[in-house]
Length: 378
Ligand SMILES: [Zn+2]
Image (cartoon, rainbow, N blue to C red; front, side, top):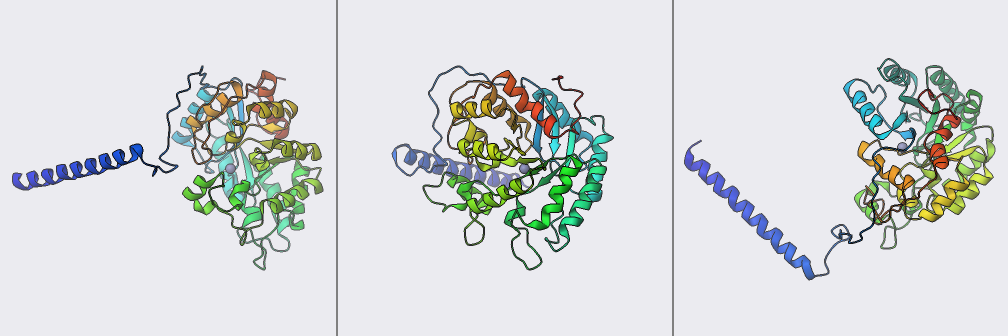
């Protein structure tokens, strides 16, 4: 390349930068005093000055009952995760994405043969790939029995069951379809819990308009919308789930995401009163607890034995938001995912007794096969 051509390219690049800057400056100037700001652009600095108590490490060892990792996790990636867990005081991750059959067995073996065999347990999943046809329940129950023999410690049912799983005729299969009964019975017989994720936050079924509390999320992630012409209503699917809880009192259920009632703790308390076989976990609903610290603390005190810690997506830098919300009484601090919540969080300041139950005691009771050597005796 000649020097002249080089100079030409550099000059063009410089002009490009200059043009970009001018355009940005022009937009910035226009923004300063006009009303065209979008909700995504509006990110005011808080001027509130109050004591802050970040909590990088949980006060007690933690079981994360709601984690997702590829089956067969091993090697450097797994060692990195264990190092992060040590810093966070996460003792055990429950991998809900265990799969079934050979995949599940391979995943259990990978952890068992790693240098950290006690730091992850695996839940099995049902194989809905061929739909729910007659005999599905008996076949799935038999597979689950084999998966537990191979090392699974629980069953996770994903939200596709109740929303998109079909029967032989192409009809949606309701959560309380009797074809699944052998599966729920098998869980009771094997003494393993079912972590069941049913439906989505109620706003996902509502019109995406200015009144929708999850408007931003539904704009950024339009695939999460559940329009009423294609999906059952929030109340319909909750009722299906509750009928399963009622019909199988011998089976232990963990309702994921606090059953999507974290925004209505009175309703959640009534559900727990009605179904002694049900507990809940806190995955991906921190924004609802942190906006009602007084009601949430009262709830955790009243239902201390019924709530398990869960986070959902594994991201080491996000756990401290949970520790801070549960352990401190800090005020008006940021949450990590803007499209979940445009508001700030407040700490619940849970007592040590409640924290121990939330962080590990309840999980060890509900999932008896979690290795318990590293937890304080109680
Ligand atoms: Zn999940």
